Length: 314
Image (cartoon, rainbow, N blue to C red; front, side):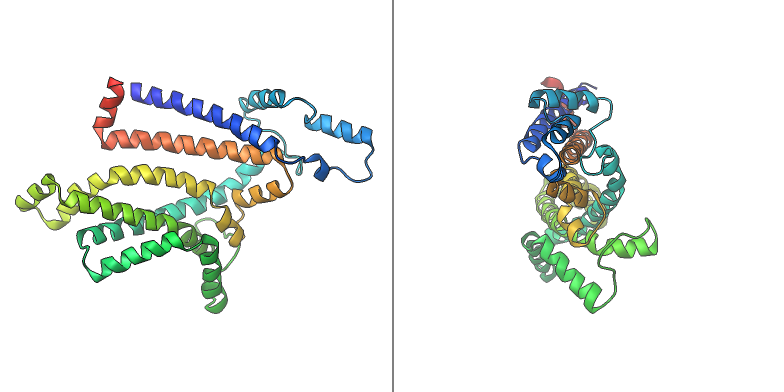
């Protein structure tokens, strides 16, 4: 319980500090008034418009007003759309979460078995091919891979649609999801593969694995029970943070495949200097990172009891 309370308090402090950094950082870049006003507006009309947006107040007053409203679940109204920024983001969030979780599952389902195979048989030709593929996954730019996938699978072969989003959990929806999910998962898949390979090679040399083999346990039981459980500790830690990265930084993939998620909304809002939407997006993203990091810490403590003991001593 002490461990959980400590982590929750730390998470709340991080959210507060990051909200200040995000708010100040966004508000010192550009002036949205010049984009939102029309050329035929008088100076009095412009001043009244600025007061309506609250941009005439000092920055610290704007931030305190933002905090007071955020405590009530109000992250401000969009300058462009005239609707609550939180509403606009929540409308796009399901599409982004669908894409991010699909990419996450692909990275886990493909990356861990490939990494374990490469770790158990490092000299096999297939293992060398797996590691070469992981290097490509790290090296190739996401937008270029996305464009190549569209050209091959959508334009030349005509197997899959190149843009848009189908209905959730339908065959058409899965066809629309396939290309962007694979594109977003490639980097994470390469990362998971290399982590699993390194963890497997290290675990295979440990005494408990040698002892399990000496007892006559089947190879599959040794791998699934003794090796897999021990490599999950670093993999879970990294994967938790990478899930937040998938959600927050899917902007490129959403742009290439015209996926109607939060990333597309962010790009449009940045171009129009729609500050409330940008701030709301970044604050929600920080909150997601913090929550995911908290869950990862709890899972880490569940997998490795030594973490809980260290926290109790601290």
